[in-house]
Figure 1: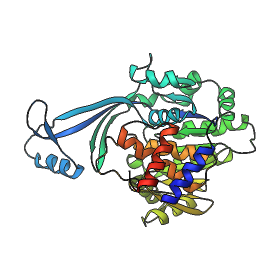
Figure 2: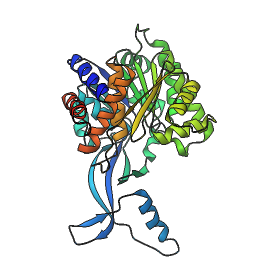
Figure 3: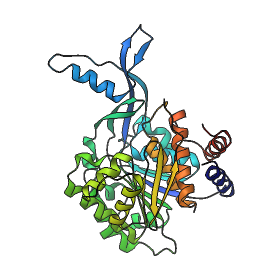
Figure 4: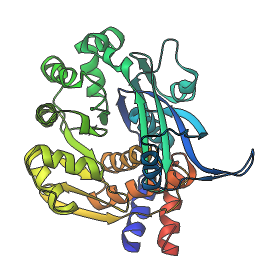
Length: 370
């Protein structure tokens, strides 16, 4: 890993001063990060329930009785896949056009994001996310009802007609459609983009990247998932299409394709073969891998046993991976940039700047751990 980190640092040093642009959408949440109380000692001090298993056991003990669950708010911030990805890309210096559920008027939680973005478009009100964080994962209790308003008609009303959207896509390096599972009309939205916008786009010598994140499709039917995967694969006509998955999502998509769960490499390759796109990438907690041009690549991650925060870590990984691809880095370097980005985030609660991500990689290489 040391050699790969040193290679990444050298490559990033040569890429300083880049000029990249991204279009990111379409969700938006007000995230309320919570810790769950185990034992309360006094007004200011308590023991936190450290794992999801222990929390689940506490809930099960309440069956047939009753109990109260005390949550302590840690922080409130702009949430949703698109907000985390946009903020991370902005920190690197990428020019971002953000399309999402920002509210009307813009919710105060998004003021910083829209101030930094090149352009912003609000389609509806943000949802609410109560996120219980533990050392071994997180439980997100979501209220995304407003997302039913994110329709093709609403997108055109706010962003512009197909001609305007085609011009925007012609000029971007990264186009990212996120939170497929909760943007309920996204299959139709994507179909309309392919049917109405793609014919108006220019042919580019080097295709830009289209990045998709599903955001836990467990609640969607197998038929709906397969339909969504088929539509995503059609973006390959105008883009180098990338499907990003966490470990749970990787096996969910494999199951939808009737593929067995056979570990990171085998399952990623199998999903890649089914999708027929430029890249399928998966990022478990302790490692990350991707399949590009039929070849599998893997790197270790800087595991953190007691993270400051985990909500948004996957999106921040995606930001590093997408940045690496857009900069023309090889697959291993793009994966390494992704794990450095998420590693910095879980330790600091924010995305790294370009300089900070270089320093993180350099320190990890020199010290062997971070």
